[in-house]
Length: 130
Image (cartoon, rainbow, N blue to C red):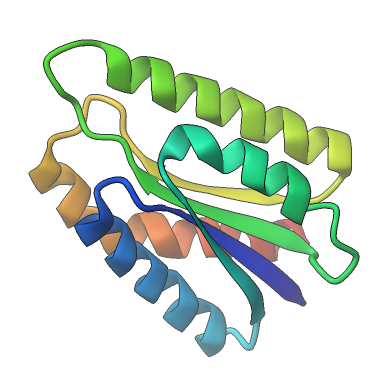
């Protein structure tokens, strides 16, 4: 089983740890991570996923990001648009996409506390669907 991981660089201190946790978890399950791609932010993940998911050697995609609440509802707009785009892409392409994007309405402290669980659940979702 070959997977790709797409990581948002926004809130990079958190997402780098999510990437580490996802890669480690995949290795423990003997899942090959054949591609890792970095994008500027969570909103950019669906575009990268739409390219990567079509690659013949990719069985599924894990997406990682942290959408942290600011002073407006921008985090909600980003999280909902990204989730909907990824769900539609997964259905259209017939390949699983593990949603490892924490938020919205999440503080930095909450995002940090969920690094491991969010990343490993996204890997597990792809594995179980495959």
